[in-house]
Figure: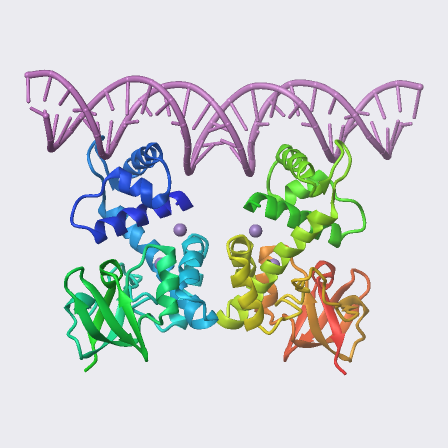
Length: 219
Length: 219
DNA sequence: TTTTAAGTTTAAGCTTGCTTAACTTTGCAT
DNA sequence: ATGCAAAGTTAAGCAAGCTTAAACTTAAAA
Ligand SMILES: [Mn+2]
Ligand SMILES: [Mn+2]
Ligand SMILES: [Mn+2]
Ligand SMILES: [Mn+2]
């Protein structure tokens, strides 16, 4: 497995996971920042190796073998993220960028030691589940979308799903991260933006930002 | 900088450091496990970039710019080694192999955090000096070669220089590692092998093994 | 049913880092 | 001084992972 195939399998898994529809080559190309010609190329190669189910001009899917590999890479990524955050106190954005590279270069043995060091953790610093060595995924509690939250009640940020690097900074600046407690001050139904109280501070979030946040009720 | 150039510059620096004579292409080829044609190729490319002083059919040398880069990579390597040993309790052999890859893939920022976490350490787990961010090298105490050690006196292992993977295991099995105290039991002048007491155990070392060990007198 | 736009594939080509095989140069031993 | 072995270089070629441009397929609109 090379870096390029690691990243391809991972992107295919994550895209599939994020949406209802089948994954199209253009999406993969956009996510991986390569041309769609390169995507076709890689798809053919991985199909030959039995990792991707692929028919020309049709959407593509991971085979069970491909999914198994994808989960291994995601496990590495998320273990690195948590390790770097816990041990070296790196912020969410750095941690992701660093893990994007380190995921390809640590031995199995090293990853297992990191796993043990962290006490076989279930979630990474974004609140995303860390696949286990067996390939199974820890069950997340049923999380509440921030949209569904009731004004006045207090919640705990459980998970933040961000793709855009700028947004990491934004949330960091406003203190929004997994584990943080917050309250809804008001919902603006006309454009679905919300006003929150995070710590002592009031924050206004657009719909796009609101959709990135998932909560657990605080007992 | 790519992995191949990183490794080339590092190997050139270390070979130069290990021996009196100038570095020959064959040595570099052997160390990097590539053909000498590939060495010539890389030498030309790095000469163009001002990192290596190179004239065809003559030995090659790092330029000051090349040396600066080499030291940066060595710094990364040794910081990773110490980090993996201290934090994840990996053994000397694993630590080296892991560092051989990780040295190319961590950001400056991550390396600095590791440096701070370790308290700006001066030596790696082999006893080799860790180049500072400035590029300077911590001065090692004047170490004693094991050959020069006097029977009866007690010493501290300060530094172990190993290239051969099997030897890591051998030394590990006999408990020989930096920080370990030992005594010379007897020197066999006829073939320069030595008998040591390491911990409670007696060990016989051939000349080749003896030459890998450097000591500090114990007060 | 034809047209069109979006998406995909093919073809040709580039770069890096390597290979082997044939050669040239160097310097040492005779 | 000559000849030879060791070291180094050149040439041709390969694989991976990309690129752009042109050709093609699909599905949906007109
Ligand atoms: Mn991530
Ligand atoms: Mn990656
Ligand atoms: Mn090392
Ligand atoms: Mn390396």
